[in-house]
Image (cartoon, rainbow, N blue to C red; front, side, top):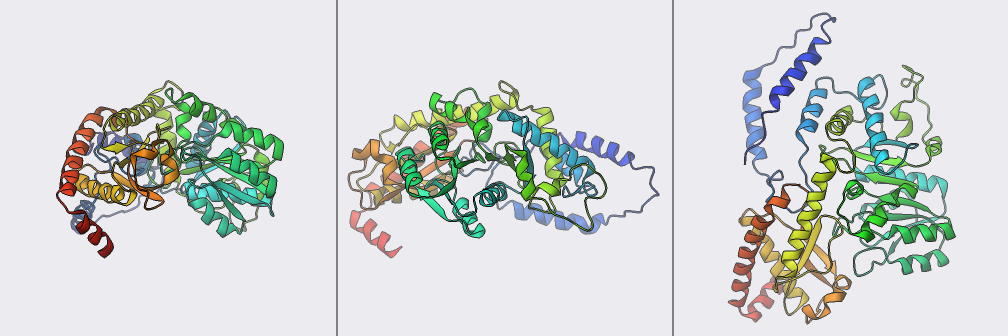
Length: 468
């Protein structure tokens, strides 16, 4: 597989048009030393060869999805100006494009009135969401599930907010009974709801959490950094669909265009249902915000300088691929979900593997059937290593015993409270056409790994584990 390069013809045409728009300015000599640049760029290309093939369907490990062609082109085009979306002086056109693009993101969840902006990623977006929560409930705790992204606990520490982790059920979702007990015992100001956990893609039971909100009056912050775009798909299970259909009722949410939104890294988004929380952002600056009476994005964000290129790329992508159900973008995302279900079915029917539960989004994880949790973990690591050598790139994840409650008899000896699993994020629509190829490679390396394990005396395995 080679990189797509035909679109560079369109880029050159667009750059020529942009350049011509500034012909009214005095001529500026911009000499470029191509002789000096060339060897450095070729060295950059050489260094970049030491990478995983993230763009290829055989990379099915971590949450890495290449930006679409239009995003690459628009981002690159904007760099000839390098706009800064902190204020209109630095990013006049790109600020307007950001507002339009963010409004379209809010529209996914049915919000016509909102406050929101782009930021550097999900971590910063979640920080802003919890910062507002702290301002509204300065003495109350924040809670999230044990499978929520670790950023929430760290952010709470940075903001000096008391944080509690809530146990998960056997499907890696927030345990609603534990939540209710905590609400009775603690002063809870905000519940973080994960709409697609990073380890398993599990979706917290938002409908039931909303029922508790009506009783206890806490805020709901939805971390939809990974899963938010699945609101547009047409092939979710009914229970998962019901959770996504409730997202219009939360107080704030995060969505990451640089995950499923086909954008380069550095593009997250925070959205608030109630625009009045903008009062907490209010500040004065002696040298910005004077070019227009219109709201500057820097007045509703914690970050100062922000890449206008991110807004330009997102705007262009959503112009080409509108965020509508049944559209091209939504259909491609549905293929990722379909690919995950196809791989899950193959794993479930293979006696060498253990699958804990059906995936809710497009993430699949599985354990290797073995006599003990430690041996299963060792075999998973071996398969991971051998797969990488055969250009099938998977991921590893440590999963608690509780997730395998429905398959308790599959691992006879739980000599540790967790098992290391193999995991795939089938984020690319192309994965659907490559499931058979992925399975063929996984089948082959698993056969080799298990054959090697049978040929190795158990005592040797035990000693090697102790040495490690």
